[in-house]
Amino acid sequence: MSSLKQHPGEAPIAKSGPQSVKKLLTKKRILETFYKEEKKTIAELCETTNSSIPSITAIMHELMAEGWVSQFGTGESKGGRRPAMFDLNPEGGLIAGIDLSRKYSRLGVFNLHNEEVCDVLELGEGLETTGNILELLKEAFVALWAKHGIDKRSILGLGVTIPGLIDIRSGVSYSYDLFEGRRLSDVFEDVFGLPTVIEHDTKAMAVGESWFGLARDKSNVLFINIGSGIGLGIIIDNVLYHGHSGFCGEFGHIQMDPEGALCYCGKIGCLETIASGTALVKKSREMIEAGKSSIISQLMEKQGGKLKLATIIEAAKLGDLFAIELIEGAGEELAKGMAVLIHLFNPEAIIIGGEMAEAGNLITDPVKQKLNKYTMLRLKQDTKIWLSALKEKAGLYGTLPLVFKHTLDRKYGNGPGSC
Ligand SMILES: [Zn+2]
Image 1 (cartoon, rainbow, N blue to C red):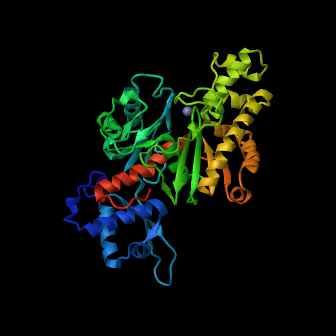
Image 2 (cartoon, rainbow, N blue to C red):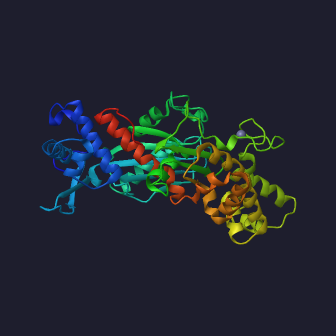
Image 3 (cartoon, helix red, strand yellow):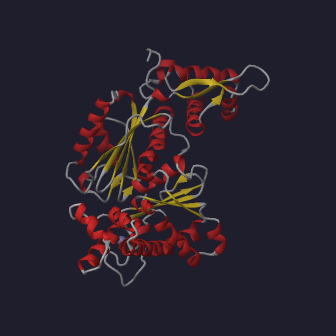
C-alpha cells in the first residue's frame, strides 16, 4: 500500500484534517451500505445519505485514500457515461474470528468481502478440554498468520464466540472460571493485542445465518443450535435480541418433563436432558450397555470407544433403527418447544443448526410432523423449518458483521446499531 493507503483500522482521523460529526457519520453510513448491499455508484450513495454529489465525491476520495474503498468497474448507463461502481476494498483490512466451544475451537481470517483468506482452522481443544485454551489459541493464530503471510497490523479486530451465560452489561462470563470474572473482551485484547468483540455462540450463529445464510432476506428468524446443549438465537426486525441481561435464548432449559432427569443447570427435566447431543449420547450408551443391538457399537469400536452425537447420526444414516428412533424422539420433544416459540414469535423461519443439522431429514421430518400436532395451523403455515446452510461455520461468520460494526463505531462514533 502507498503511504496514503493505510489500513483503515490504523488511519488516524486527523490525517485528513478535522472532520465534522456529520462527515464522520456520512462516511460510516457509506461503509455500512457497502458492507450490507455491496457495489454502489456515487449517485446511489447520494440518495442513501441524502447528500450532494460534490460532497459524496470528496468523501469517496478520502475513503479511497484511507484504504477502505476501491472502484469496481462501471454500472449501467442511464443516458450518459457509464457511472463508476465502488465497494469496500477487500484488501483494506482483515477480520479475525474465533469460535470457541466446549470441546473444540475454530479460527479464521476474512477480508472485507467476508471471504476466507485462509482455510478455517479447527483445533480439537476447547473450554472444557484444557486449562490453557487461550495460550493454545494464540499459538495457533500466530502460526496461521505466519503460514499465510498475514500482517497482524492489517487485522481490524477479533470476534470471539463463547458458550454459556455472558452478561452484556458487564461483559463477564458466568459459566467459565478460566476468565477470572474479567470482562471477556479485555481478556482477549490482552492475549491477542486486537480490539475484540465477544458474542454468545448461538447468538453469533444466528447473526451468521441472518447475514450470510438462508435467513439473509428474512427479518424475523429463530436459530436453534443443537450440539452438546440446545440454544436459541433470536433475530427480530433484523436485529439480534439479547434480553435484559444477555441471557435470553436458554431454550434448552425449559422444563419438558417434571419427572425427568436432573439437568446440569440444577433443574429437573430440561429439554437438554431429553433432546441434546449429550442426552442422546447418554441414552444410547446406557441402552447399548444394557444389550441393545445397534451399529453404534461397531462405529464406537472404530473410534476407540468414543461416542459422540456425530456417531449416532452416522448410524442413523446407515439405516440403524435404534439411532433413527433416538433422533426421531429428540425431534418430537424439540417440536413441543418449537411450537411454543412459533406461538410467541411468529417467525418467518426457524433454522436448525449445530451438530444435529448433519442429521438432515432425520431431524426435520419428525419436527415438522409434530409441529402439525402442537401448532396453530395459520402460524405453522407461515413458518419455514430449515437446516443451516453455513453449518459449522455459522458462528465464525457471525463474528464478521459484529467486528465490522465495532470497527466503524470506534473510528466514526457509536451511532445507531446496524447489526
Ligand atoms: Zn437445565
